[in-house]
Image: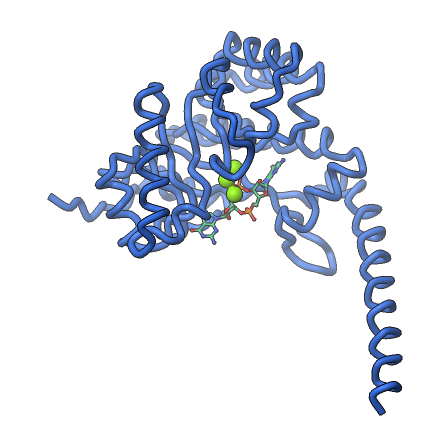
Length: 284
Ligand code: C2E
Ligand code: MG
Ligand code: MG
Ligand code: MG
């Protein structure tokens, strides 16, 4: 019995893997058409002032409205896009759509907030990036400081001539730069000195344990103090509970983002938030 079961298990396992590979190939093939077929959509997650809970920014997060599989999260397809050389097209679409949306809110007379956009390493390395951004900002008549680019530590810590030059050009252009998932990448902090970074986004993994894990709180305190002494803004990602919010506020974190304040949502919902800010429960 055991033998038969074992054999079946192996066969089942290999068929499973085979199916996964096929699914990945199919998904990649379909992804090539996703931009053209207008299947990508941006959701926006609120970023709020830690003290007043006022909306101070939104992060654009891409989704794929797949005809059969429904709304796919970026975890399902950004990696595929990077491997298949599709990330330039998708990334350019994301940038243009985020700026178009921001200009549209502005044109509706809404009091807009800056939009943050995630950038893949390959986009950052592309020689046309700065010019592309300059043209897009001009096309929509947007001030550059309304756009914030989120880079990961692995991008920022590269010490190549190209990285240094691109960082300087982005700075001259006037867009804001933030480090995403701070604390999960490389431990070298020298890039913080080398580049004109505006903001650190503390990764969710450090926020999760706040209020019961003394080590997480020590890390958060350290990062906030580091950011403050370097003159950087500091945002905490993945805030889900009032207890986490309280600890972050107590230690002087500037901006909070997480399900407690809003999930990533469709642009229409952000428009409503901009038009009718919820009355914040201002504590003392
Ligand atoms: P990220 O940039 O760190 O974005 C934050 C992620 O955490 C989002 O997942 C968001 O929905 C999720 N999140 C926010 N608050 C909470 C919370 O309170 N609890 C929990 N459990 N999760 C929270 P999402 O939208 O699935 O995006 C995942 C990642 O995909 C992003 O991480 C980013 O690295 C990447 N990504 C998303 N959009 C783009 C894009 O347009 N271009 C590129 N290159 N990457 C993107
Ligand atoms: Mg991000
Ligand atoms: Mg992040
Ligand atoms: Mg993250």
